Image (cartoon, rainbow, N blue to C red; front, side, top):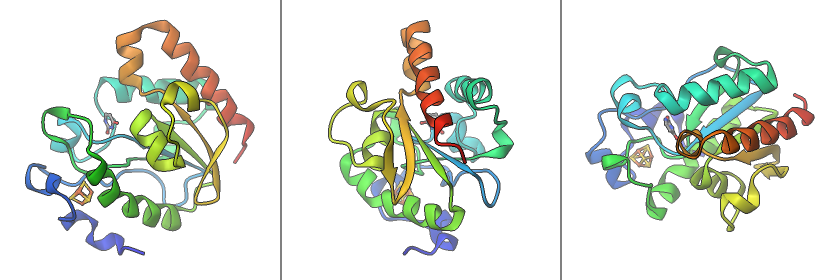
Length: 179
Ligand code: URA
Ligand code: SF4
């Protein structure tokens, strides 16, 4: 198991050369819910906190509406902890290099449910091989902990209200898991 004390200095993949800082995640020490996105964007790379941009604000609002949880009540992080240049999709090698950090966070945080946000996170968190259109809203397991995948809020910002409705329905599946 990787030592989380070393995460801020990780150089396990090439993203270490272009990042401003490693975005570790934020939230309580023992959250019921762990939310896992794709990778930091520009604002996150600068500020050090995940999901602070527009898509983050939408996600936080949907979680508040459907699960009754404020941002301060769950832990929020990304599968890939350093920003990919120009916000490109993380490469498979980068996801593979970074995934053990999520395993270490899972062990430390001991969440009772996991929400994977977007296609990259859905595959890395739950081991899906199919795309998010096939996998969203199903109950799956990440290191024994139950959870659900949903669309990335950036897709909702592009795709309009339909995607938001699907995300709301996926979050209601998560709610049935309790925790
Ligand atoms: N901000 C994040 O921290 N993660 C994402 O996946 C998108 C925006
Ligand atoms: Fe390390 Fe992950 Fe950053 Fe790559 S993306 S340098 S594996 S923390």
